[in-house]
Length: 114
Ligand code: SF4
Image 1 (tube, rainbow, N blue to C red):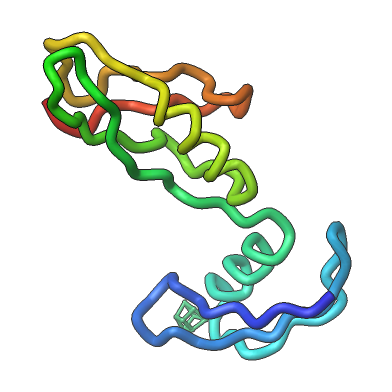
Image 2 (cartoon, helix red, strand yellow):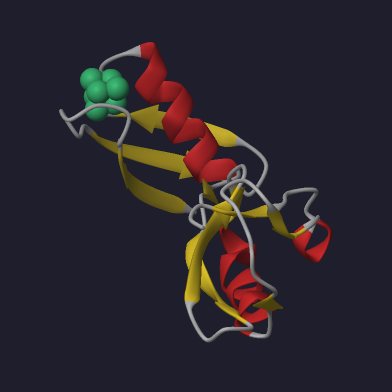
């Protein structure tokens, strides 16, 4: 498979062209520094994203939250679905765990607001 990946490590935004399989990179072109090459490799083989969202509270307010660490990109929508069914009981403070180990990823969803 082939992918065009825009590096987001710095504002230069180099465009990389990566060729390989699900487990192996055969070629990577277009990066201009080692950090960009590493980003392109991760983005090709195991892309991850920080999830930011909101959950309902028992008082009707929406509480902002995010994943404590990046989640596998392929699981983000399923995690959003889990959060859609969550209602937290106030009071809650920044950093409180809202969902521990979401979908068995080992990553917690934490509150980012009170
Ligand atoms: S490859 Fe290097 S220079 Fe290019 S956008 Fe990425 S970090 Fe910036």
